[in-house]
Structures are given as C-alpha cells and as structure tokens.
Image 1: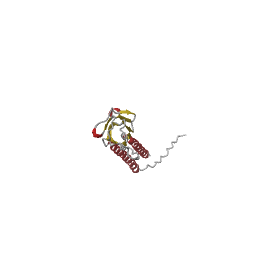
Image 2 (image 1 turned 45 degrees about the vertical axis):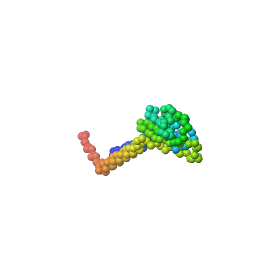
Image 3 (image 1 turned 90 degrees about the vertical axis):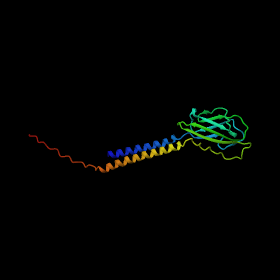
Image 4 (image 1 turned 120 degrees about the vertical axis):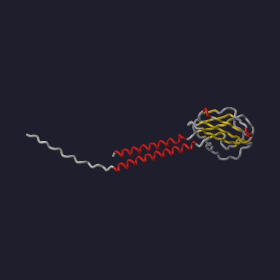
Length: 196
C-alpha cells in the first residue's frame, strides 16, 4: 500500500512539473514585433513624419536602437527613439525623396534578450492599386535563442516525464517482489488458573 502511495505521488509530481514547463514555455519567448507604421512592404505617397513599431511587451527603455535609412544610404532620423508602453516611435526629417526606406531596429526584450529586425517600405509618386494588407512577419531575432529556449523546455519536460516513469516503474517492481504478508494467527492467550 505504501508503494502505491509513493507511485501516485511520483506521478502527480511529474504531472505538475510538466504542466509548469508547458505553461512556462510562452514566457521563454522574446518580444515580437506586432505591427508598424508604415507597414512592412507598404508603398506610401509621401514620407511620414515618423515611424512607429509596436511590440507584444514593452521593451527595456535603455536598449532601444532605431535607424531609418533612406535612398542613397543616408539616415533620416530627426530624434532618438521614444518609448510609450509597448510602442517605439522615431521622428523623421522631412524629405520629398522617392525610393526605398529601411527601418532597422534593435530592442532588449523584457526577458533580457536582444531582438532585432528590418522593415522596408517605399515612397512613390503614386500609390499602387489597392493590395490586401500584409501582416508584419515577426522580425528575425539576432540570435536563435527563442527556438532554442523552446527546445530546452521540451527537453526538460521529457526528462521530468522519464524520471516520473522510472520512479513509478521502480515502485511497481518493488511491490511485485514483496509478497503480501499473510496475517499470522495470534496464539490464544494462556489461561491462568487462580486457585480458589
């Protein structure tokens, strides 16, 4: 009976550990870019007064870097990046120059890992025909650590499962080896005769 209690405790511990790892896996992910203005791949008729990047979580204010590069490779930033919640914006110097522009950014996510990416947009004299909006793809992280962290979490979950299964199997084997003890009949108490 004690072995079955221990086996249940081991299985319950393993289940809670796996549940903790599964629910913690999203926390291992880094901030992702959820949108921008102008949008990635957009064509606009005039250079906007500022560019805006929106993230899932507010990034670390000290780790924000943003550069807007216009045609000819010249930076068109007018100020430094500004953080408001999970939105980072940068004012741009006015220009009538047409062509391709690139927003390069790097932030430090709330978990301390760097995330960087680029967004390209075009300034053209006439906007092209209406095209369905394209959702910004997540930026390529400067390191592959987001997917690495996911694999680490999966590996840890498998180790915990294997340990729980090994503990349960060990307890099951022990229980099978120890035959249940049959109760030993107790001897009848001797009757003591008291002389009368």
